[in-house]
Image (tube, rainbow, N blue to C red; front, side, top):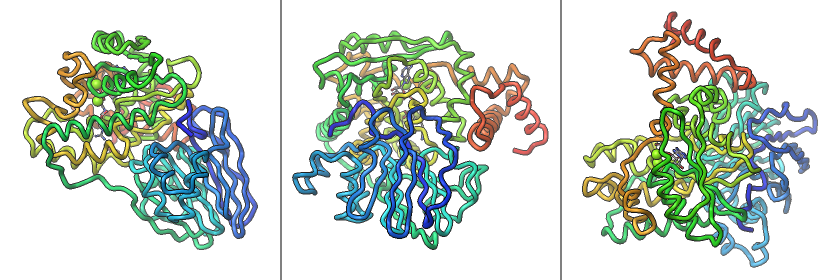
Length: 507
Ligand code: IOT
Ligand code: MG
Ligand code: MG
């Protein structure tokens, strides 16, 4: 089955127990959707779950051969995967496909998948949890002998009794005994004892590929084309378009594939926008284009929502995600499938504006080591508004290529992201291909608006980074750990608490 408008499920909250007692914690997803209840029984275990969906959850749950799987998200290499199975598998939904692969490869099945998903598999007294290669759908777990809870949003586990430490995971601030699985992880849990083993299914390449220019350019073009095509779905897709090379490339490849026009949308504030640059691209590819201006104070009011959705503590990431969250909240027209250019700058070193090759590769190595746990690719940023996002540059095959290419192909002839610009040159106006990088936080004026907001409230100029960190931490403690509704968070209260902390130096 090709990708639909939305995947069968966009999130889950699941409990697996040896006994059949106790249900689920209260549902408290930021993601918007209906919840389908799933109940399944096995020798030695009982599964109860809420599958979050927008109309057709069946494809997210499969049961066969004494095993069951729940899958939030979707797979992008179905063709490859089907070639490993008997012909009859072609009609299988993604969850059923994972189950069939598991029957053959056991937990190594997760090494085969290129997708955007979180999965839970039950086989008697054994529970297997898995994240995609980049952990793009966050997954959290809480395990004690005889019981396991897992969810795609940690706030849904905030009232759980602390569980035991888990290999391959990281603790979550304020929620002892609940852990986030790392990216590209399979966690194999023995339900009876709560003991688990962790196995990595992916790691960022550390070696670099030396290729002639034309081969490198062709490789980037083909892999990106494949990733965009696999993500188009069955309804008209939308691309969030800044008019930079990353999102313009995605939009051009999507438009080139479909007979109908695609939709593109660009956001700005009264302080800053990239409307002219995005319009140039929209006209060139013939998309239905719209512009959304979000007042800066509305943007700042969405800060609690961005933290609530992304469950992140990193202030720089919040600045990148805030304009996008605010944009997704403004996009109407029912549940949309949205493609982004997010993430291209990480493997290509686009954020570093660095021409020298050693510091460029230093930055790439460090960013590829550091992305895990930031949750910047989480679908919840848009599922809060009912939309599903997907990021072609973090497709497993694209990412493997982009990370691997030697730094001299990324910075070349005085241009950053050279290999990508060259790979898309025939599809876009020359000015777009040559356009210097502008970060979403700069193009929307968010970084400076956030700074001003703090300075206006009397917080010191000289510690803005630290202040932003405290601010985001305060929000996290309220809306994630504390379960508060982001609409009810008072900015003034948050500012007061940050001031108190700064004064008492409890940093
Ligand atoms: P940037 O690359 O500017 O934007 C990311 C994506 O957001 C774009 O490709 C586009 O799809 C969408 N977007 C940006 N601006 C607009 C706009 N005005 N209207 C509509 N859509 C827009 C930050 C950044 O530079 O964003 N993101 C980096 C990575 C951050 C660093 N993370 C890390 N080190 N782990 C990125 O690679 O996307
Ligand atoms: Mg970019
Ligand atoms: Mg940009």
